[in-house]
Length: 472
Image (cartoon, rainbow, N blue to C red; front, side):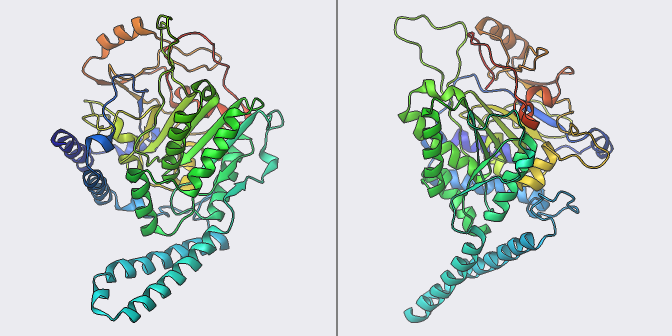
Protein backbone atom coordinates (compact mmCIF):
# COMPACT_ATOMS: atom_id res chain seq x y z
CA UNK A 1 0.00 0.00 0.00
CA UNK A 2 2.84 2.38 0.92
CA UNK A 3 4.75 1.57 -2.27
CA UNK A 4 1.70 2.15 -4.47
CA UNK A 5 1.10 5.48 -2.71
CA UNK A 6 4.65 6.53 -3.60
CA UNK A 7 4.09 5.52 -7.21
CA UNK A 8 0.88 7.56 -7.38
CA UNK A 9 2.67 10.58 -5.90
CA UNK A 10 5.44 10.33 -8.51
CA UNK A 11 2.81 9.93 -11.22
CA UNK A 12 1.08 13.13 -10.03
CA UNK A 13 4.41 14.95 -9.96
CA UNK A 14 4.91 14.08 -13.63
CA UNK A 15 1.51 15.60 -14.45
CA UNK A 16 2.26 18.72 -12.43
CA UNK A 17 5.61 19.42 -14.09
CA UNK A 18 5.49 18.64 -17.81
CA UNK A 19 8.31 19.98 -19.98
CA UNK A 20 7.72 23.09 -22.02
CA UNK A 21 6.29 22.55 -25.48
CA UNK A 22 7.82 23.72 -28.72
CA UNK A 23 4.73 25.47 -30.02
CA UNK A 24 6.23 26.26 -33.39
CA UNK A 25 6.99 22.59 -34.08
CA UNK A 26 3.62 21.51 -32.77
CA UNK A 27 1.92 23.76 -35.30
CA UNK A 28 3.78 22.32 -38.24
CA UNK A 29 4.31 18.73 -37.21
CA UNK A 30 1.05 18.00 -35.44
CA UNK A 31 0.62 16.53 -31.96
CA UNK A 32 3.31 14.35 -30.47
CA UNK A 33 2.43 10.70 -29.92
CA UNK A 34 3.81 8.12 -27.50
CA UNK A 35 3.30 4.45 -28.40
CA UNK A 36 3.26 1.71 -25.78
CA UNK A 37 3.25 -1.92 -26.89
CA UNK A 38 1.24 -4.58 -25.14
CA UNK A 39 2.36 -5.56 -21.66
CA UNK A 40 4.18 -8.91 -21.79
CA UNK A 41 5.80 -8.91 -18.36
CA UNK A 42 4.43 -10.31 -15.14
CA UNK A 43 1.12 -8.87 -14.04
CA UNK A 44 0.81 -7.29 -10.64
CA UNK A 45 -2.03 -7.67 -8.20
CA UNK A 46 -5.31 -6.05 -9.31
CA UNK A 47 -5.66 -2.59 -7.82
CA UNK A 48 -8.78 -3.58 -5.87
CA UNK A 49 -6.72 -6.28 -4.13
CA UNK A 50 -3.61 -4.26 -3.40
CA UNK A 51 -5.38 -1.04 -2.31
CA UNK A 52 -8.38 -0.27 -0.14
CA UNK A 53 -11.55 1.22 -1.62
CA UNK A 54 -10.84 4.53 0.10
CA UNK A 55 -7.30 4.50 -1.29
CA UNK A 56 -8.51 3.83 -4.83
CA UNK A 57 -11.01 6.69 -4.73
CA UNK A 58 -8.46 9.01 -3.13
CA UNK A 59 -5.90 8.22 -5.85
CA UNK A 60 -8.48 9.03 -8.54
CA UNK A 61 -9.35 12.31 -6.82
CA UNK A 62 -5.69 13.35 -6.50
CA UNK A 63 -4.85 12.62 -10.13
CA UNK A 64 -8.04 14.28 -11.38
CA UNK A 65 -7.53 17.39 -9.25
CA UNK A 66 -3.96 17.86 -10.44
CA UNK A 67 -4.99 17.30 -14.07
CA UNK A 68 -7.74 19.92 -13.81
CA UNK A 69 -5.30 22.37 -12.24
CA UNK A 70 -2.77 21.71 -15.01
CA UNK A 71 -5.31 21.96 -17.85
CA UNK A 72 -8.53 23.73 -16.81
CA UNK A 73 -9.66 23.91 -20.45
CA UNK A 74 -10.16 20.14 -20.45
CA UNK A 75 -13.75 20.62 -19.30
CA UNK A 76 -14.49 23.35 -21.80
CA UNK A 77 -16.20 21.52 -24.66
CA UNK A 78 -15.78 24.43 -27.07
CA UNK A 79 -12.17 25.57 -27.50
CA UNK A 80 -12.49 26.62 -31.13
CA UNK A 81 -15.30 27.08 -33.62
CA UNK A 82 -16.45 23.58 -34.67
CA UNK A 83 -16.67 23.04 -38.44
CA UNK A 84 -17.64 19.38 -38.21
CA UNK A 85 -21.45 18.92 -38.22
CA UNK A 86 -20.95 15.81 -36.07
CA UNK A 87 -19.29 17.90 -33.32
CA UNK A 88 -21.27 17.86 -30.07
CA UNK A 89 -21.06 21.66 -29.91
CA UNK A 90 -21.90 22.37 -33.54
CA UNK A 91 -24.54 25.14 -33.39
CA UNK A 92 -27.74 23.20 -34.06
CA UNK A 93 -30.97 23.37 -32.07
CA UNK A 94 -30.59 19.79 -30.82
CA UNK A 95 -27.03 20.38 -29.58
CA UNK A 96 -27.98 23.62 -27.85
CA UNK A 97 -30.83 21.82 -26.06
CA UNK A 98 -28.39 19.14 -24.87
CA UNK A 99 -25.94 21.75 -23.56
CA UNK A 100 -28.73 23.69 -21.82
CA UNK A 101 -30.00 20.48 -20.20
CA UNK A 102 -26.53 19.74 -18.81
CA UNK A 103 -26.28 23.24 -17.36
CA UNK A 104 -29.65 22.77 -15.61
CA UNK A 105 -28.63 19.34 -14.28
CA UNK A 106 -25.28 20.64 -13.03
CA UNK A 107 -26.73 23.47 -10.96
CA UNK A 108 -29.65 21.35 -9.78
CA UNK A 109 -27.28 18.65 -8.49
CA UNK A 110 -24.83 21.19 -7.10
CA UNK A 111 -27.62 22.74 -5.01
CA UNK A 112 -28.59 19.33 -3.67
CA UNK A 113 -25.08 18.18 -2.77
CA UNK A 114 -24.06 21.47 -1.12
CA UNK A 115 -27.31 21.75 0.85
CA UNK A 116 -27.30 18.23 2.31
CA UNK A 117 -25.66 19.31 5.63
CA UNK A 118 -28.14 22.18 5.95
CA UNK A 119 -31.16 19.88 5.56
CA UNK A 120 -30.51 18.52 9.04
CA UNK A 121 -31.80 21.80 10.47
CA UNK A 122 -35.13 21.72 8.63
CA UNK A 123 -38.29 19.81 9.54
CA UNK A 124 -38.82 16.46 7.79
CA UNK A 125 -41.73 17.75 5.70
CA UNK A 126 -39.55 20.44 4.07
CA UNK A 127 -36.75 17.92 3.49
CA UNK A 128 -39.14 15.57 1.70
CA UNK A 129 -40.56 18.44 -0.37
CA UNK A 130 -37.06 19.60 -1.34
CA UNK A 131 -36.00 16.11 -2.43
CA UNK A 132 -39.23 15.55 -4.41
CA UNK A 133 -38.72 18.82 -6.30
CA UNK A 134 -35.09 17.94 -7.00
CA UNK A 135 -35.96 14.44 -8.25
CA UNK A 136 -38.73 15.78 -10.48
CA UNK A 137 -36.41 18.31 -12.15
CA UNK A 138 -33.53 15.86 -12.45
CA UNK A 139 -35.63 13.02 -13.87
CA UNK A 140 -37.52 15.26 -16.29
CA UNK A 141 -34.34 16.80 -17.75
CA UNK A 142 -32.51 13.44 -17.81
CA UNK A 143 -35.44 11.82 -19.60
CA UNK A 144 -35.34 14.59 -22.18
CA UNK A 145 -31.68 13.80 -22.83
CA UNK A 146 -31.85 10.00 -22.76
CA UNK A 147 -35.17 9.09 -24.34
CA UNK A 148 -36.56 5.59 -23.92
CA UNK A 149 -34.36 3.34 -26.04
CA UNK A 150 -31.27 1.35 -25.03
CA UNK A 151 -30.13 0.83 -28.65
CA UNK A 152 -29.60 3.21 -31.56
CA UNK A 153 -28.42 2.21 -35.04
CA UNK A 154 -26.57 4.44 -37.50
CA UNK A 155 -28.79 5.65 -40.31
CA UNK A 156 -26.40 7.19 -42.85
CA UNK A 157 -26.51 4.25 -45.25
CA UNK A 158 -24.95 6.32 -48.02
CA UNK A 159 -21.63 5.99 -46.12
CA UNK A 160 -21.73 2.19 -45.96
CA UNK A 161 -19.26 0.50 -48.24
CA UNK A 162 -20.99 -1.83 -50.74
CA UNK A 163 -18.42 -4.61 -50.31
CA UNK A 164 -18.74 -4.85 -46.53
CA UNK A 165 -20.78 -7.86 -45.45
CA UNK A 166 -23.04 -6.55 -42.70
CA UNK A 167 -23.94 -10.10 -41.66
CA UNK A 168 -20.35 -11.28 -41.13
CA UNK A 169 -19.23 -8.21 -39.15
CA UNK A 170 -20.88 -6.69 -36.10
CA UNK A 171 -19.84 -3.24 -34.88
CA UNK A 172 -20.92 -2.03 -31.42
CA UNK A 173 -20.28 1.29 -29.68
CA UNK A 174 -20.83 2.29 -26.05
CA UNK A 175 -20.72 5.99 -25.24
CA UNK A 176 -19.10 7.76 -22.31
CA UNK A 177 -20.46 10.23 -19.77
CA UNK A 178 -22.75 13.18 -20.60
CA UNK A 179 -24.10 11.54 -23.78
CA UNK A 180 -27.84 11.46 -24.39
CA UNK A 181 -29.64 9.87 -27.31
CA UNK A 182 -28.87 12.74 -29.72
CA UNK A 183 -25.12 12.77 -29.08
CA UNK A 184 -25.02 8.96 -29.24
CA UNK A 185 -26.65 9.19 -32.66
CA UNK A 186 -23.97 11.70 -33.72
CA UNK A 187 -21.26 9.36 -32.40
CA UNK A 188 -22.39 6.27 -34.28
CA UNK A 189 -23.14 8.20 -37.48
CA UNK A 190 -19.62 9.65 -37.30
CA UNK A 191 -18.14 6.16 -36.84
CA UNK A 192 -20.27 4.82 -39.68
CA UNK A 193 -18.99 7.60 -41.95
CA UNK A 194 -15.36 6.82 -41.08
CA UNK A 195 -15.47 3.04 -41.36
CA UNK A 196 -18.20 2.60 -43.98
CA UNK A 197 -20.19 0.13 -41.90
CA UNK A 198 -23.43 0.06 -39.90
CA UNK A 199 -22.80 0.73 -36.20
CA UNK A 200 -25.08 -0.28 -33.31
CA UNK A 201 -24.93 2.00 -30.27
CA UNK A 202 -25.60 0.73 -26.75
CA UNK A 203 -26.77 3.74 -24.78
CA UNK A 204 -25.03 4.46 -21.49
CA UNK A 205 -27.52 6.96 -20.08
CA UNK A 206 -26.42 10.29 -18.65
CA UNK A 207 -27.70 12.01 -15.51
CA UNK A 208 -25.56 15.15 -15.59
CA UNK A 209 -21.93 15.97 -14.85
CA UNK A 210 -21.92 15.40 -11.09
CA UNK A 211 -24.08 12.29 -11.01
CA UNK A 212 -22.19 10.78 -13.95
CA UNK A 213 -18.95 11.32 -12.03
CA UNK A 214 -20.36 9.52 -8.99
CA UNK A 215 -21.71 6.80 -11.27
CA UNK A 216 -18.27 6.33 -12.84
CA UNK A 217 -16.55 5.97 -9.46
CA UNK A 218 -19.09 3.35 -8.36
CA UNK A 219 -18.60 1.36 -11.57
CA UNK A 220 -14.80 1.62 -11.46
CA UNK A 221 -14.32 0.38 -7.94
CA UNK A 222 -17.46 -1.51 -6.87
CA UNK A 223 -18.06 -3.58 -10.00
CA UNK A 224 -21.62 -2.31 -10.36
CA UNK A 225 -23.42 -3.93 -13.30
CA UNK A 226 -25.56 -1.36 -15.09
CA UNK A 227 -28.34 -1.86 -17.63
CA UNK A 228 -25.92 -1.01 -20.46
CA UNK A 229 -23.44 -3.58 -19.09
CA UNK A 230 -26.16 -6.22 -19.32
CA UNK A 231 -27.02 -5.15 -22.87
CA UNK A 232 -23.36 -5.33 -23.89
CA UNK A 233 -22.96 -8.74 -22.27
CA UNK A 234 -26.01 -10.15 -24.06
CA UNK A 235 -25.02 -8.72 -27.44
CA UNK A 236 -21.43 -9.98 -27.28
CA UNK A 237 -22.47 -13.38 -25.97
CA UNK A 238 -24.92 -13.85 -28.81
CA UNK A 239 -22.44 -12.82 -31.52
CA UNK A 240 -19.56 -14.83 -30.04
CA UNK A 241 -21.72 -17.95 -30.25
CA UNK A 242 -23.03 -17.13 -33.74
CA UNK A 243 -21.36 -19.16 -36.53
CA UNK A 244 -22.42 -16.47 -39.03
CA UNK A 245 -20.40 -13.70 -37.37
CA UNK A 246 -16.76 -13.64 -38.47
CA UNK A 247 -15.68 -10.47 -36.63
CA UNK A 248 -16.98 -8.46 -33.70
CA UNK A 249 -15.82 -4.89 -33.07
CA UNK A 250 -16.42 -3.14 -29.76
CA UNK A 251 -15.62 0.59 -29.70
CA UNK A 252 -15.74 2.19 -26.26
CA UNK A 253 -15.50 5.77 -25.04
CA UNK A 254 -14.82 7.03 -21.51
CA UNK A 255 -17.19 5.44 -19.02
CA UNK A 256 -18.27 3.06 -21.78
CA UNK A 257 -14.86 1.36 -21.46
CA UNK A 258 -15.71 0.46 -17.85
CA UNK A 259 -18.93 -1.12 -19.11
CA UNK A 260 -17.12 -3.03 -21.88
CA UNK A 261 -14.36 -4.20 -19.53
CA UNK A 262 -16.88 -5.46 -16.98
CA UNK A 263 -18.91 -7.31 -19.65
CA UNK A 264 -15.70 -8.84 -21.00
CA UNK A 265 -14.70 -10.09 -17.53
CA UNK A 266 -18.07 -11.83 -17.17
CA UNK A 267 -17.82 -13.41 -20.62
CA UNK A 268 -14.24 -14.64 -20.06
CA UNK A 269 -15.45 -16.45 -16.94
CA UNK A 270 -18.29 -18.17 -18.77
CA UNK A 271 -17.47 -18.87 -22.43
CA UNK A 272 -14.76 -21.03 -24.05
CA UNK A 273 -11.77 -18.84 -24.81
CA UNK A 274 -11.60 -20.13 -28.40
CA UNK A 275 -14.62 -17.96 -29.23
CA UNK A 276 -12.87 -14.66 -28.43
CA UNK A 277 -10.39 -14.66 -31.33
CA UNK A 278 -12.94 -12.81 -33.51
CA UNK A 279 -13.44 -10.00 -30.97
CA UNK A 280 -11.49 -6.74 -31.36
CA UNK A 281 -11.77 -3.88 -28.86
CA UNK A 282 -10.84 -0.22 -29.41
CA UNK A 283 -11.16 2.38 -26.66
CA UNK A 284 -11.00 6.18 -26.71
CA UNK A 285 -10.47 8.08 -23.47
CA UNK A 286 -10.95 4.90 -21.45
CA UNK A 287 -11.82 5.34 -17.76
CA UNK A 288 -11.55 1.63 -16.98
CA UNK A 289 -9.28 0.33 -14.23
CA UNK A 290 -8.14 -2.67 -16.30
CA UNK A 291 -8.58 -4.64 -19.50
CA UNK A 292 -8.10 -8.40 -19.30
CA UNK A 293 -6.83 -10.52 -22.17
CA UNK A 294 -5.45 -13.81 -20.81
CA UNK A 295 -3.02 -16.06 -22.63
CA UNK A 296 -4.48 -19.03 -24.43
CA UNK A 297 -4.11 -22.17 -22.35
CA UNK A 298 -1.91 -25.03 -23.54
CA UNK A 299 -3.57 -28.49 -23.72
CA UNK A 300 -2.23 -31.07 -21.23
CA UNK A 301 0.78 -32.99 -22.53
CA UNK A 302 1.59 -30.40 -25.20
CA UNK A 303 4.80 -28.41 -24.88
CA UNK A 304 4.32 -24.62 -24.78
CA UNK A 305 4.41 -23.10 -28.27
CA UNK A 306 7.30 -20.98 -29.46
CA UNK A 307 5.22 -17.88 -28.87
CA UNK A 308 2.15 -17.46 -26.74
CA UNK A 309 -0.95 -15.76 -28.05
CA UNK A 310 -3.71 -13.96 -26.26
CA UNK A 311 -7.39 -14.88 -26.26
CA UNK A 312 -8.85 -11.72 -27.86
CA UNK A 313 -8.09 -10.84 -31.45
CA UNK A 314 -6.84 -7.32 -30.76
CA UNK A 315 -7.06 -4.41 -28.29
CA UNK A 316 -6.02 -0.77 -28.81
CA UNK A 317 -6.41 2.26 -26.56
CA UNK A 318 -6.35 5.83 -27.88
CA UNK A 319 -5.75 8.50 -25.26
CA UNK A 320 -5.30 12.25 -25.06
CA UNK A 321 -2.46 13.08 -22.69
CA UNK A 322 -4.52 15.53 -20.57
CA UNK A 323 -7.85 13.70 -20.58
CA UNK A 324 -8.62 12.94 -16.93
CA UNK A 325 -10.32 9.65 -17.78
CA UNK A 326 -7.17 8.29 -19.41
CA UNK A 327 -4.92 9.57 -16.62
CA UNK A 328 -6.78 7.31 -14.20
CA UNK A 329 -7.17 4.63 -16.90
CA UNK A 330 -4.69 3.24 -19.45
CA UNK A 331 -2.00 5.90 -18.93
CA UNK A 332 -1.52 4.64 -15.38
CA UNK A 333 -0.31 1.38 -16.92
CA UNK A 334 2.44 3.00 -19.00
CA UNK A 335 6.06 2.71 -18.02
CA UNK A 336 9.07 4.69 -19.14
CA UNK A 337 12.11 6.33 -17.63
CA UNK A 338 12.58 8.79 -20.46
CA UNK A 339 10.79 11.98 -21.43
CA UNK A 340 9.50 12.64 -24.91
CA UNK A 341 9.82 16.04 -26.53
CA UNK A 342 6.28 17.00 -25.63
CA UNK A 343 5.01 14.88 -22.76
CA UNK A 344 6.31 13.67 -19.43
CA UNK A 345 5.77 9.94 -19.33
CA UNK A 346 5.00 7.91 -16.26
CA UNK A 347 8.00 6.87 -14.18
CA UNK A 348 6.54 3.69 -12.70
CA UNK A 349 3.97 1.06 -13.57
CA UNK A 350 0.90 1.67 -11.42
CA UNK A 351 -1.39 -0.80 -13.20
CA UNK A 352 0.14 -3.30 -15.64
CA UNK A 353 -3.17 -5.20 -15.88
CA UNK A 354 -4.14 -3.26 -18.99
CA UNK A 355 -3.91 -5.41 -22.13
CA UNK A 356 -3.48 -3.83 -25.54
CA UNK A 357 -1.51 -1.20 -27.39
CA UNK A 358 -1.71 2.36 -26.08
CA UNK A 359 -1.45 5.52 -28.19
CA UNK A 360 -0.89 8.63 -26.08
CA UNK A 361 -1.62 11.73 -28.16
CA UNK A 362 -0.64 15.18 -26.96
CA UNK A 363 -3.78 17.17 -26.27
CA UNK A 364 -6.75 17.70 -23.99
CA UNK A 365 -10.48 17.16 -24.18
CA UNK A 366 -12.97 14.38 -23.56
CA UNK A 367 -15.69 14.62 -26.24
CA UNK A 368 -15.82 11.63 -28.56
CA UNK A 369 -16.54 13.42 -31.84
CA UNK A 370 -15.24 16.88 -31.02
CA UNK A 371 -11.95 15.84 -29.43
CA UNK A 372 -11.06 12.23 -30.25
CA UNK A 373 -12.53 11.70 -33.71
CA UNK A 374 -11.59 15.17 -34.98
CA UNK A 375 -8.03 14.63 -33.73
CA UNK A 376 -7.44 11.04 -34.84
CA UNK A 377 -9.96 10.38 -37.64
CA UNK A 378 -10.78 13.84 -39.05
CA UNK A 379 -13.34 14.14 -41.80
CA UNK A 380 -11.91 15.55 -45.04
CA UNK A 381 -12.36 19.30 -45.39
CA UNK A 382 -12.44 21.09 -48.76
CA UNK A 383 -8.97 20.89 -50.29
CA UNK A 384 -7.81 18.04 -48.02
CA UNK A 385 -7.25 14.42 -48.93
CA UNK A 386 -9.60 11.89 -47.30
CA UNK A 387 -6.46 10.25 -45.92
CA UNK A 388 -5.34 13.40 -44.10
CA UNK A 389 -4.75 12.85 -40.38
CA UNK A 390 -1.92 14.69 -38.67
CA UNK A 391 -1.92 12.13 -35.86
CA UNK A 392 -1.71 9.14 -38.19
CA UNK A 393 1.10 10.75 -40.19
CA UNK A 394 3.13 11.42 -37.04
CA UNK A 395 6.25 9.38 -36.31
CA UNK A 396 5.60 8.22 -32.74
CA UNK A 397 8.05 7.89 -29.89
CA UNK A 398 8.01 4.15 -29.24
CA UNK A 399 8.47 3.50 -25.55
CA UNK A 400 11.02 0.69 -25.36
CA UNK A 401 10.76 -1.53 -22.32
CA UNK A 402 11.75 -5.11 -21.63
CA UNK A 403 8.24 -5.91 -20.38
CA UNK A 404 6.37 -4.46 -23.36
CA UNK A 405 5.88 -5.83 -26.83
CA UNK A 406 7.51 -3.80 -29.58
CA UNK A 407 6.85 -3.61 -33.34
CA UNK A 408 9.49 -5.41 -35.37
CA UNK A 409 8.25 -6.27 -38.85
CA UNK A 410 5.83 -4.55 -41.20
CA UNK A 411 5.02 -6.14 -44.53
CA UNK A 412 3.56 -4.55 -47.63
CA UNK A 413 0.11 -6.04 -47.02
CA UNK A 414 -0.25 -4.02 -43.86
CA UNK A 415 -0.20 -6.86 -41.33
CA UNK A 416 1.23 -4.88 -38.47
CA UNK A 417 1.70 -7.63 -35.92
CA UNK A 418 5.08 -7.85 -34.21
CA UNK A 419 6.35 -11.33 -34.93
CA UNK A 420 9.09 -11.96 -32.44
CA UNK A 421 9.04 -15.06 -30.30
CA UNK A 422 10.78 -15.76 -27.01
CA UNK A 423 14.27 -15.86 -28.56
CA UNK A 424 13.81 -12.48 -30.26
CA UNK A 425 12.15 -11.10 -27.14
CA UNK A 426 15.25 -11.94 -25.12
CA UNK A 427 17.40 -9.99 -27.60
CA UNK A 428 14.89 -7.13 -27.36
CA UNK A 429 15.27 -7.15 -23.58
CA UNK A 430 19.01 -6.71 -23.94
CA UNK A 431 18.58 -3.77 -26.29
CA UNK A 432 15.96 -2.00 -24.21
CA UNK A 433 16.89 -2.96 -20.67
CA UNK A 434 16.06 -0.18 -18.26
CA UNK A 435 13.40 1.35 -20.47
CA UNK A 436 14.09 3.98 -23.12
CA UNK A 437 12.08 6.21 -25.41
CA UNK A 438 13.31 5.69 -28.96
CA UNK A 439 11.84 7.33 -32.09
CA UNK A 440 11.61 4.68 -34.83
CA UNK A 441 11.71 6.51 -38.15
CA UNK A 442 10.17 3.88 -40.39
CA UNK A 443 6.92 3.63 -38.41
CA UNK A 444 4.15 6.17 -38.43
CA UNK A 445 1.11 5.97 -36.19
CA UNK A 446 -0.97 4.66 -39.09
CA UNK A 447 1.53 1.80 -39.46
CA UNK A 448 0.88 0.72 -35.87
CA UNK A 449 -2.88 1.31 -35.72
CA UNK A 450 -5.01 -1.66 -36.73
CA UNK A 451 -8.21 0.40 -36.46
CA UNK A 452 -6.90 2.79 -39.15
CA UNK A 453 -6.92 -0.09 -41.62
CA UNK A 454 -10.71 -0.49 -41.32
CA UNK A 455 -11.58 3.01 -42.56
CA UNK A 456 -13.76 3.44 -45.67
CA UNK A 457 -14.90 -0.18 -45.64
CA UNK A 458 -11.39 -1.59 -45.87
CA UNK A 459 -9.90 -4.43 -43.83
CA UNK A 460 -6.34 -5.38 -42.88
CA UNK A 461 -4.68 -8.44 -44.37
CA UNK A 462 -5.76 -11.71 -42.72
CA UNK A 463 -3.54 -12.92 -39.94
CA UNK A 464 -1.47 -16.01 -40.46
CA UNK A 465 -2.40 -18.86 -38.15
CA UNK A 466 1.16 -19.45 -36.96
CA UNK A 467 2.52 -19.39 -33.42
CA UNK A 468 3.89 -15.98 -32.54
CA UNK A 469 3.85 -13.28 -29.91
CA UNK A 470 1.11 -11.03 -31.25
CA UNK A 471 0.95 -7.40 -30.28
CA UNK A 472 -2.58 -7.16 -28.98
